Image 1 (tube, one colour):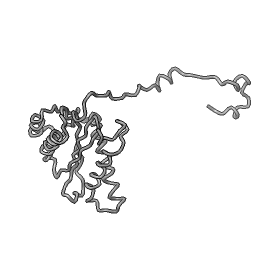
Image 2: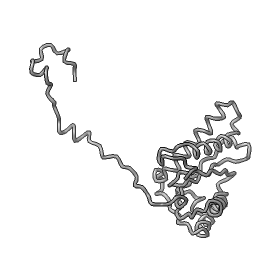
Image 3: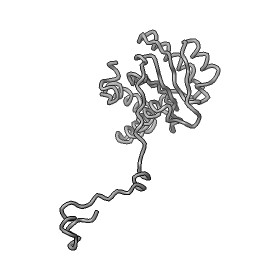
Image 4: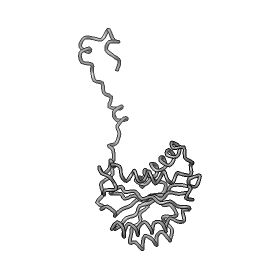
Length: 201
């Protein structure tokens, strides 16, 4: 609305309290739906996990890897990263991670959520899920939003993989070291979603 000082011919009554003009058509056209917040889940720590693969990275890391495999606990937000030379290694690495979670951490994985990538829905991957008694759920095709936890952490790790070598003037082949450092910091810094450190949970 224009300033009152720019309207010298405005009647005194309107100068004291300008009228509030509302248009029902404008109000109907500009209305927005209420924000949707995801429902809280009842999974315990170590029961439900989300996973995704990021890559290939170019150049290959100095350890000879091209891909990042992320596994994140949906309750504690604790992040596990592994590195692959090819996507075909995914079922074997998932088997190693699930076994380590059971033996070292005492977790009882029940749900594993991924996208529909071939390495997650192959026969060998399904055999891994059955051997660990884990239910595998996938997203709807072309809907990465349904795996948002893993997608966001991949974005965070990729930003770190690009920024750290550039800032330290190291060769780009050190991106794997940058990702390991970023994962360590992520697990040991206060997380706004759980109001504590993922490592402590």
